[in-house]
Length: 90
Image 1 (cartoon, rainbow, N blue to C red):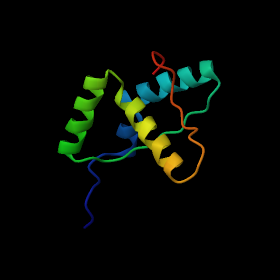
Image 2 (image 1 turned 90 degrees about the vertical axis):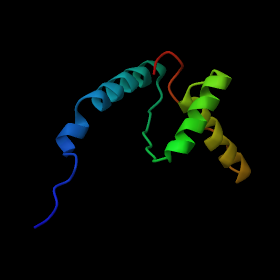
Image 3 (image 1 turned 90 degrees about the horizontal axis):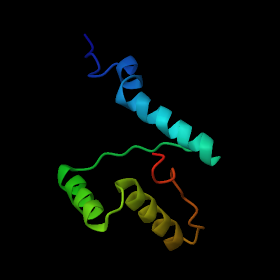
Image 4 (image 1 turned 45 degrees about the vertical axis):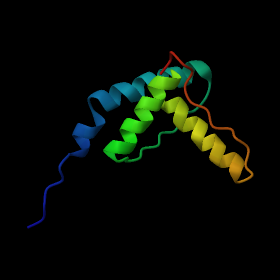
């Protein structure tokens, strides 16, 4: 007998995630930029550290992630061209 998945695909597509996608899609439509999504998992300790840094700097967590990814692109000799939704349109 196989185990059932903890979450069905149908549940993951509806609810808050769907609302976030709709808001981001609206923001992308108004800014003319196509947005792609990336998801990652962090330890609880790491998450708290990033969240506190976000609060201390007064920047959204997404902004910190985009900044870090652009720094990584620079480090490897690539153009730092990552952007996200405009603040307030997230």
